[in-house]
Image (spheres, helix red, strand yellow):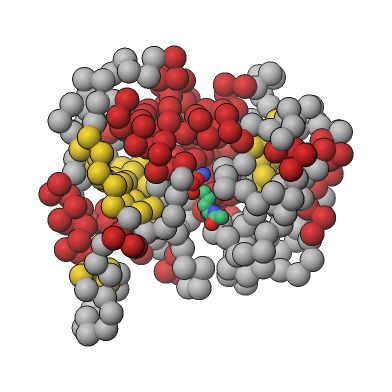
Length: 315
Ligand code: AN0
Ligand code: CP
């Protein structure tokens, strides 16, 4: 595997899930694979889970890891082509990415959307420049429109814990005070549409995701109706795709609480984290028996390890 930026980079998602669950049983089985190989993790935005779980995955495979918080510790990066750099930026992404490729065998990049210019975000302008200029295999640590390591983890978690052969999975919108990216829900939808699950998306009118990611999903505007008989509920806020990056008025009653679990199939509740308690998701759910959020975050290691393994095999 030369690139892991979306579900489209994987032919066989079920095998990849199985490989991740194998690593959960035997984390150090392939310690020789990464010997003398270096992973560079480059962050343009904050991270707890992606940073630590991907490092852990690489260490389990015997790799060396370098982390660069380029937004804080690197030179100010110019991301646009064709500009005279007479302002605050010090080096261009063309040189920066190419140089990182000299030091690392695999590069991971996190780069959130600006949420201002939809074309720029959805063309993955920054991300594609890294892919183009770094010259080594690249793994997404969340881009403007997708978070594939998270979505693979989510599928791993569902496969691991499902109690019915074809579980009902509901992605439900949640309130927030800040406009958040569509990357996590886009990506989750894209992976669930490929998986053997019944997949429903519930959100208030106006929060429709870009259709490229939701083909095959059922979209329901009534949360209670959507949640009926659910096995897994995936909670996430996102800002509107149209008008782009906006929070729409109202919708405070979309926060998931215990009483909303009553008509479900004793649903397990998932969230990628970080989560704002009692705003996005109720504390009673987070602290209760139905929450999978910490278990899910733990599974990030095995998903990342399965992806890095496939990349190491093609070096
Ligand atoms: C980010 C998002 O919604 O994309 C990262 C989630 C993994 N969340 C926040 O910015 C709070
Ligand atoms: N879920 C997730 O990607 O978390 P971080 O932003 O902390 O990496």
